[in-house]
Image (cartoon, rainbow, N blue to C red; front, side, top):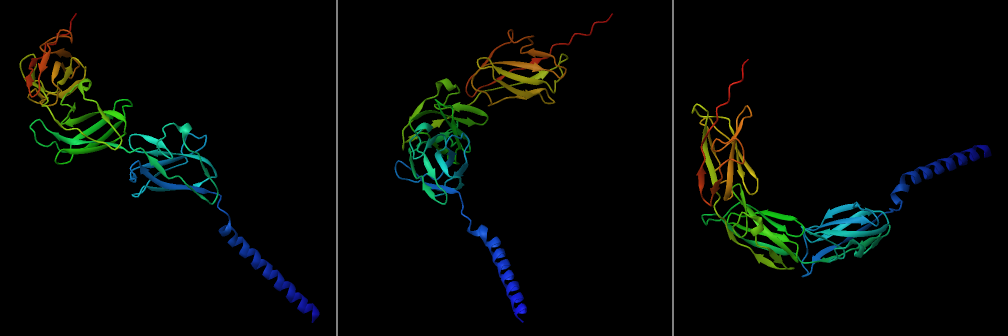
Length: 325
């Protein structure tokens, strides 16, 4: 009897031990400490307004690649989780420029170092420089609103562009880096021009934008120029499939067309006013310049002004017959 009772006690003790071990094995990971920490905060500008289009990138001290990157939400808030404990710096991207937390710092060596600890959140709320804005209205050569036109504000010092597209009424608005100088250019059809209504970037006005400033930049486009014409073969028949290159003498920029079945080509309204030479290349690789010249140096120069389309016709030179023995 005593042996039987002893046996039951041993079996029960063994079973309970097994249950305890099983419970510990299952429940253990659920109570394991998470070694990671987090960084969170809000991005505001110098006027106290949230910056809803900012991005944040966190760098472990000494690293050149970010550990994480996030966009802030509509309230300017961010939270970077799962960070291993250590020292971090936070970079804030502002569209066209960036600053280091807690804001208004461009040199990473002066950035604040945030200590991230396991199971803790570190606050990295930042106040950045208030952006500037370039806004205005663009009109076409006819005075009508220039709708759906690409517009670019380019930082003169960094060549960094900020772009948008005009609305149906020709208006546009571009957020830019403050305390910087910009040129503004836009596209009319296929031709690019600069404010104030010039095709030459060297003549573009330079606009300095201050923090919080909305600078009005309006413009009315000038009409582009063009060249059109017809090419015939040596016998006077239409020369189809001839490759036409219209070359700006001053910039060396080329504009291209291929003649149609009537030998015609058309670059109306596609050229900046200026001086041009016209090259023709046949399917077999023969090249000449208008009018019937063998090289660029001897080719005629055609000057076209705003709104003007010049007509440049040409006849292909006869191809010499191959020599026979």
